[in-house]
Amino acid sequence: WSNIDWEDNTIELDEDATKTGKERHVTIPANAIEWLKPLKKRRGAIADYRTSRLFRQAFKDARDTAGFTEWHPDTLRKTFISHHYGTHENAALTVKEAGNSFTIMEKHYKKPMKKKEADKLWKVVPTEILKITKTVA
Image 1 (cartoon, one colour):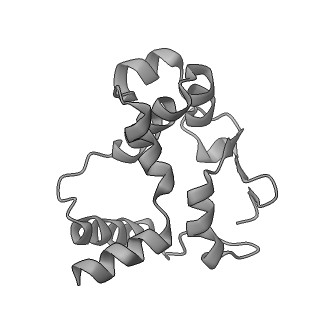
Image 2 (image 1 turned 90 degrees about the horizontal axis):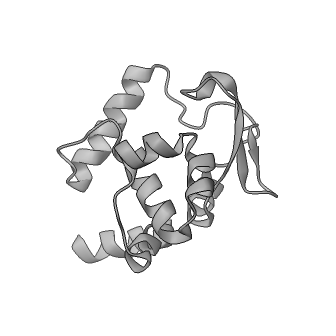
């Protein structure tokens, strides 16, 4: 929590938190801020599980509940990169935010996406999920 700058809507990723071993600052999308705000603390782990195994199990349970039974480890990364690029149409910005090279982004992560479709990801907020859950239940 202490790495989040709430005024700037950024998070500082130290070298231990990145694949490349390089520190960087990443912009937190406005809808992600809406998800984080109710959980906000001054310090400690964002996902407060005693072990990584417990976190992985909780994450799997959430995916299964949502109907995502097939899951690749890079699904969230690919989703972010494809939607970010589709929305901003700026490869340099997407590469900076994702912490990848342009070559890796193009080869492994970026799926062609129209802006209208890409923009939908940034509109997913807790209140919309609650509306969907109430409708389905």
